[in-house]
Each structure stands twice: as C-alpha cells, then as structure tokens.
Length: 328
Length: 88
Image 1 (cartoon, rainbow over the protein chains, first blue to last red):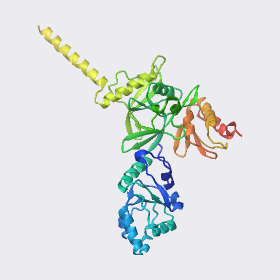
Image 2 (image 1 turned 120 degrees about the horizontal axis):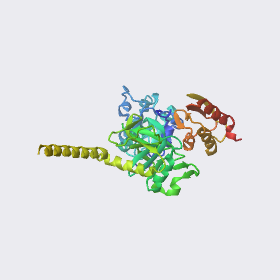
Image 3 (image 1 turned 90 degrees about the vertical axis):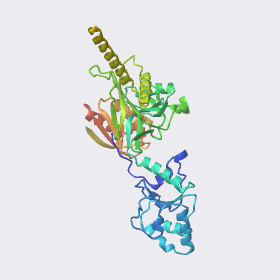
Image 4 (image 1 turned 180 degrees about the vertical axis):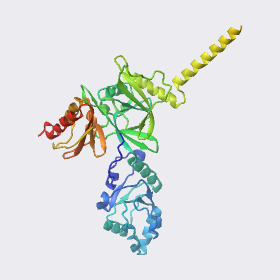
C-alpha cells in the first residue's frame, strides 16, 4: 500500500501542471527550451544574489533560482558595465531553471548565455514572494509521499470519508446513494492520496476518470453530468475511513464504539469504522451517521464515552442510595 | 504470491473494453489481483483503477496475484495480453 512518488519531475512537467486559482504559477518559457527536460529534484528555492556577486560557496544550484527585481537590476548593471563574463560561472552549474518574477525580462546577454548552457528561463507575472509561496506549496504537494488506494472518496457533511472494502461489496453503490442524498464525490475506485504538510492526507481522483463511476449493471456513468457540479469536488482531506465488509457471523463487531480504531495511511492514523453488510442495513445512512459522529468527536463530544459516563454516574447514585436505605 | 511481467500488444492501449475484459477475468478468481505500472499499483478487479494506469501500446505492466488460485489467475490474465484483448 505504500508506493512512492513518481520517478522524475521535469521542468516541462512544472509548466504543464493544471493549477488554478491561488495555486496558479502563470509560468511561461522565454528561453533555453532544450533545457526543459532538466529534472527538478528538490522542493526548495534559491535567490541567487550572492552568486551573482561572485560568491559560489554552498551554492544550492539544484534548486529553482528566482530572479526578482533586485537580481534583475544587478543583471542590468552588469550588462551596462559589460561584465557579462561574470555570469558564465553561474551556468557551469546544472541549474534546473531560472524564474523571473514581476514579468521581468532578463538582459539579452543573460538569455544568450542561458541558451548556450541550455538552462530554461521562465517568467511569471507574480511577485517574488507570492511566487515563492506558491511554488513551495506546489512542489511540496508533488514531492509528497503518495499512494493509490482502492476505494471511494466522498464528502459527507463536510467530512472526507474514504469507503474501502473488497470488490463487489457495494462501495460505489453506497457512494451513489450518498451523492443522491446531496453529498459529493471526489474519486471512485482509485483514490490518489498524498500526505501534505506533515499529517494531512489529501485525496484526489486520477485526471481522466475523475468523477466517473462504475456501477455494475449500468457501466460507467458521469456524475458531473448526471448530478451537476454541486455533486463533485476535486480534492478533500481524508478524515474518516469506512470499511465495508460482508457480514461474518464469527466476527465480533464494535457494539459500543468507545475505543478509537485507526488505520495507517502513509504513516497518518485515520479513524476507521468497520461496517458489516447485511440485507436490511441501510449503508448510506450508516455512513452519514458515522460522518456526523466524527464531526461531534472533532468538537470534543464522544457519544459512546458520554453515554458510558452517564451510566456510571447513575450506577454510582443507585449504589449510594442502596447503602443509605440499608442503613435505615 | 505470483508476479508476472506483461506488455500491452494492442495498439489502442488499455481503453474501456480491454479494461472491462481484464476486470471480468480477474473477478472470476478469488485471489487478490493487482496490476502495477512503474510504482503505481491498482486493484485488478476495478475498471476505473485499471484505466487510471493510462497504459498505452508497449507499456510494461506487472500482474500480481495473491490467494488460493493465484497461478491460474495470472495465467488467464497473461493470456488476455497475449491475445491483444481479442482486438486487431
């Protein structure tokens, strides 16, 4: 269950990412095209101020190099004073790519040297700090540990519920029923899970098949077209796992629910409930209830524990009453 | 556990029909069946999963089966690949 990240991430892949809203990088290539096949290996970035000044000790060349207004002004100064020779050392390192922010255009000298070294030059209209924040976020998602899990991811009352279970147990059917009740589908069958910012599990579907479901007897259906955009979501944090199982008379199912059972996904412990399937059990309603219960728990209220506390209090009261009555 | 490398021989790659055929075959066995491409592993009994792999002509895949009828299952699935999923 623990596959690692995809093999290689090239500068070209960075340009081709489909990022929207506050993740958009607005990158375009303005030079050094042959270098687009260079690989990005680290999530960090570097501002090459010191290196432009001629100091190359500890140069983090494997990082994406960001040229802001300051760096660009320095490049222009170099060009004016005809000191282009000082730049050639920069490109003796295998830099993945240079990014110019604020839609800045580098000097012709710089472009010529970069072309010769086949180092890609990219440009964005974002400010340096904004671009830095976005690229760090984007790269940390890309390099995050990843796995694909067989299951259905739905959002129920705002809780990301991953429905797991063997083939044919009725995962898709339960999810369809949930969608029909107004909940949202994120991914069916193959859920791509990434661990981002330490312990958050983000689930998405694969691009081509996203928001399609396979329902036995109907075939492949398009949820967006059938139920509308309100019935889908692109990604969602996984907060609860519901494991569907065929009813096993031999097995003991949780009858109280006071203990927290968790499942390990990419090293993160997610609350997990096991629901046995049997005719007459309305699975979507049970999943809805599990999601509601999970919300209560997040607010600090544990139904089963509170119930037990009430029972204990009552028993205590009864026994003191008995002692009191006996003394009389 | 039985593992076997196979290559997609039909030009169109793993589109809906071959995927359905593969899943149908896989589902007739009780073993757990997985299909692996590079480092991505999906359940061999799930159509959407198999399509998600995006396996094109000449892609190498690994069939992995685990269970009482694992050897039979791998043989049957390998045969599908050899027959180009009854295409062409």
